Image 1 (cartoon, rainbow, N blue to C red):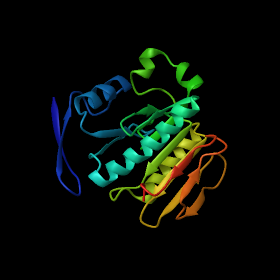
Image 2 (spheres, helix red, strand yellow):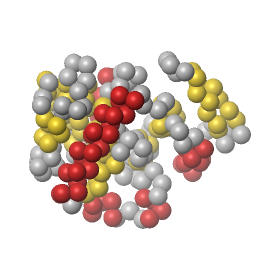
Image 3 (tube, rainbow, N blue to C red):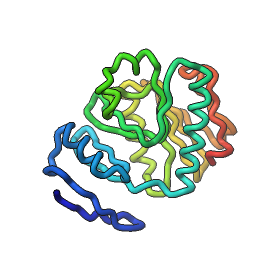
Image 4 (cartoon, helix red, strand yellow):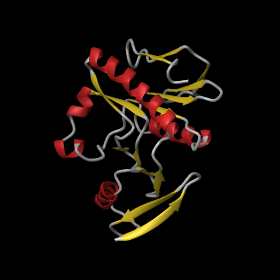
Length: 200
C-alpha cells in the first residue's frame, strides 16, 4: 500500500493508495473505499481530485440543502434525493459528488442493483453546488457546465459571499439571481422552492 501526504491550505492529509496511481474504475472504487473520510472525485481525464472534509458551517448549509430537497422529494414522490456523500459516474467518465442532487425515479430504477451500490453510472437530473472558501468560482462553473453537458436538466451554483445563485439549464447561458429569498425549481422540479435564509 502506498501512502501519500497531501498538503491542503489548512492541514496535511494522509491518503492511502492500495493500487498503482493509474486506476481503472474498479481500482478507483477501491481507493475511495480505503479513504472513506475524504471526498474524492475524478475528472474525465482520469485525474483524481481529493477534497478535505467540509468545514462545519459549510456542512450545516449542505445539510439544510439536503433537508429541503429531501422534504420536497418525499412529497413529490417522483424521484430520489442525494447528499454530498453520493458519487455518480457521468457519461464522459468523470466521477462527481455534487453537494445535493435529485434523480427521477424511472431513471434510477433502470439501473441494476450493482450499479446503484457503486458510483452509479448516471448524471443526476438536478444538482446543487455550494461554493466553499476552498472552491474557485471558475472551477465550480466548469463543473456545472459538465453536469449540463452530461444530461442534467437543472443546476444551482450558490455563491454565498456575493449572495448569488447561478441557475443552469442545458443549452442556455446561466441566469444569475442576486440575493434571492428563494429559488424556484419549476418546471423541472414542479413546486420546489429552495429557501435561501439558512443557506446564506
